[in-house]
Every structure is written in C-alpha cells, then in structure tokens.
Length: 434
Image 1 (cartoon, rainbow, N blue to C red):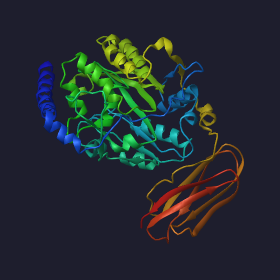
Image 2 (cartoon, rainbow, N blue to C red; image 1 turned 135 degrees about the vertical axis):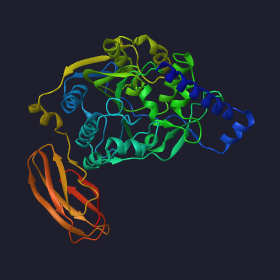
Image 3 (cartoon, helix red, strand yellow; image 1 turned 30 degrees about the horizontal axis):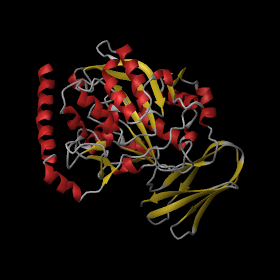
Image 4 (cartoon, one colour; image 1 turned 90 degrees about the horizontal axis):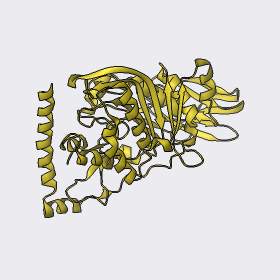
C-alpha cells in the first residue's frame, strides 16, 4: 500500500510541477493572463450564527438519524431563517469525489434531508452539485443520486463553466484557480461534507473538503496542485487555506455519523470506517475545521490535531474564521425526538415548495407551508398569464399542505403556480412534458 501511495504522489508531483512551470514562464504566463478576467475571492454573507459578543456558534449533535440530528442542530444554532430570505437560491455542495459510498462520498439521505430543511424556510431554487477527481456523471450514476434529488424538488448540477479566481497578494508562480461559476454566483453556499482522514493532507474538514468547489480543467487542478507538495509541508498546509478561502461558504454541515479513519479518504487507500454518531453545524468553516480535528483525534489513534495548526493559522491570517475554540460558543446536544420535529420545522413565514415531480407528464404534487391559519389562493397560469386552474381559495390551518394538479390536456411547456395570501404572493415554475 505504501508503494502505491508513494507512486501516486510522485506522479502527481511531476505532473503538477510541470504544469506549474508552464504557467510561471514569465512573459508567456503574463500574456496568457492578460486576456482573461480574474476575479477576487467570492464574498460570503455575514455569519448570522454568532453570540452577542461576536463569538461564532458551533453545534455538535449526537444521534443515529441524520434527519432528526439536523433538525435539532438547526434549532440549537438558531434556524435557517437567520441565514435565508424567503426567495433565496441555495447551492448544497456535498462530497462527490469518487465512486465509493458514504463516508467517502456524502450520503444521499443526508442530502435530501438538507434540501428539505432549506425548502422549509425558502421558496427559492435548491441546487446540488460537486466536482470530484473523476467525471461528474460517472459519480452521479454510481451513487444513484439524480432521481432522489429531483424528487426532493432540487436540481443536480454538472458544473461545466468556471471563473478565474485568485488573491491579489499571490506571487506569479501560484496559478489562477478556476472556481465553478454555479458555486461562485450562488447567493448561499452550504458545504455538506463528510469527516475523513486524508493520508496526504492529514485531514482537515471544512477547509480540505471545500476545495472541491475549485478545479482547473484548463490549468492546474486544485487537488493535484495541493498534492504536488510534500506531505505535511508548510506550503501544502498554508495553500490549503488560501484555496478554500476563494469560495467562502455561508454554512458548514459535517456529517460525521460515520468517519473514514487511518489511511483515507478512500477505502482502496486503506481507509477504515468507524462510527462517530455526530453531525457538526457552524457558520464559520475554520471553527468547524478546528473542532472536527479534535473529534477525529478521539476516534483515530493515528491522527494528531496539531498537524493542521498551520492551515488554521493561515485561515486566521486571511480572516476566514476563528480557530481558537475557547472563542467559540460550542453547543453539544442530542437528536430531537420525532414528536418535536413539526415544531422545529414550523416556519415563520409562508413557503411555496417546488412541485414534485418536476418536470411532470401527468399529475404533480404542489405543497405549501403556513405558520398560522390563513386564507390561501393557489392557481396555475400559462406563460401568457392566463389562468389554467384554481386549486384552492380558502382558509388552511397552520402546517404543510399538499394539493394535486393534473396536467392532462395541456401542451408541453412551462407553467406557473401562484400562491397568494393577504401577506404575500409567491410563484414557482413547473415544466409539463407530454
């Protein structure tokens, strides 16, 4: 196994050092960059999950059900309402890095539960996607994730286009990195990662696993560039924070019910799956990284949390977050009981959820959630604004309600579902295919 890993690292080193050399050829490199618009790092929203004195909150939930753990954690940290507006679009970035199941990659059930938690507070579009070391579609097909995500009312993205992004403090020998446009442009980015020991990076969580948001199809791939350094080298550990800081997620959720210990991140590299039975939620990716490193140290006798101190220090220098856990409000709790879920999910405003399935070719379900008894009008219109159907115009009690719409007799195309009350009007696009 050691020889296999050594051979792989040496190959990457030679490959990436050669690519980096090409990029650093003085005048040629400058000429290449002259015709390309280079952007600054993505600007994230202010972290709403902080104490009155400014200390970030971090919640660690123990349990055996991701859904119940997530709801308990979101309730403890203050709820997604603090982060999301009613119509915010959200991108959930899981770990889709290889054709291995959870915890190498994110668990599909966890992704669906996270989609539903977002939909409970925002009627905006929910997108899901990541780019791993191999072709996106190959990973998606292997994991069988496309249908569950579509049925949950979200979109599965392929990540095809990129922006050139770099820090203006970087020297010329560090190449531009290419951030996927879908990630850079999203109003809210949720980093949904697994907790994995990495034989080369010696594991960081929110920081290491966030570099999947960045690639280099025409230049230097982020993973390969990082692995061109010697293990535990200063350059590796500090550059890790530099690259992750190009994206700046709004929320980090770490699914650590099971972890990959020893020689991860893949079973084929000698990784060992162990039960931890926890999830971690934090609006500060650096605090999440520091906390998860300490967790991993408890469950993996071969890991030392001090190994990532240089990464954390560079992240602090870049003002990406807080690494000193004495300056973090840590809330440790357990998953909620099923009886309390409805109260936790109850939103403070009216939500019109995406119809399911969408696209549809016969009958589709349209659901909405209201915080109190309200008169609701639910109608379907065509692109010209003509009313096609009135599904409801009456009072509904608080909670979630589901109505059916039969599209038989319609022409293929886009239609709109409008929900209106005395307080708000919401609209969702629906695609009908014969």
